[in-house]
Length: 284
Image (cartoon, rainbow, N blue to C red; front, side, top):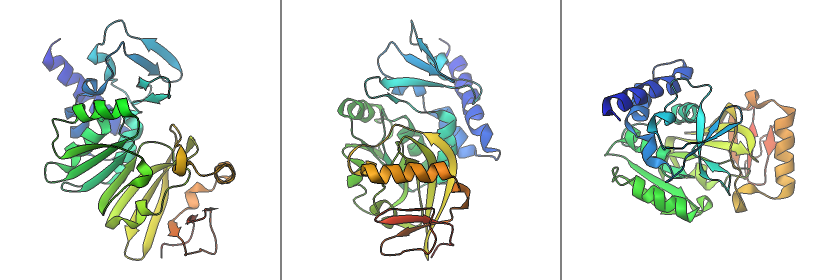
């Protein structure tokens, strides 16, 4: 296959994935155009998941199949069929990464790295002066990600439980699975001006953006989403999950403006957990 043809397809794909943002995002577009998606795929045969619901097993692992030239419909690739893990919607990730607002030199924590594709895009965004710590729980995916990230020596893969991170302060936290009960440490260990972007919910839900300000945490929902749900501590107990599902069913996500951590108790809250709350009140 002609390298020029593949490069052109990758550039067209990058333009298509960032176009729904409606604003220029040259660094993000360049990252999508630079990182070879095919290098992060399983050995094969590749199983493609077409929106809305089609499934295709490729007879040949053709990299051109991985670069749709429009954001919708787009395709996912199965990484672990038994666990229901795929490589993620590129246009959704473009929206989430835009909300994350990564800058060159940032220290980024990527939780739920899979085989490392979006970790590599983060590494492109922070550049060699920055650092990406990518965490993956599933052992065979973590091993693949470790190999795949070798071209970006400032990106480090760690196999572990996302609930145990970060170990120190970071500028950005990017989460790629649905979390019902995020730990307060994800927010308290953000540096001033730092951001966290995470899917909040029990599978369905919405992407939440949290920014650390001088006086508290600003919060807003970015877009509805569907991600594989967390297990263990990040899933919360059954009662917590039921209350969170009920909050999303009631609606009102557009009113959320702030995150409050215990012992802070805002007078009005869209949702209250044991250690945190989302509120329509101003941050502070």
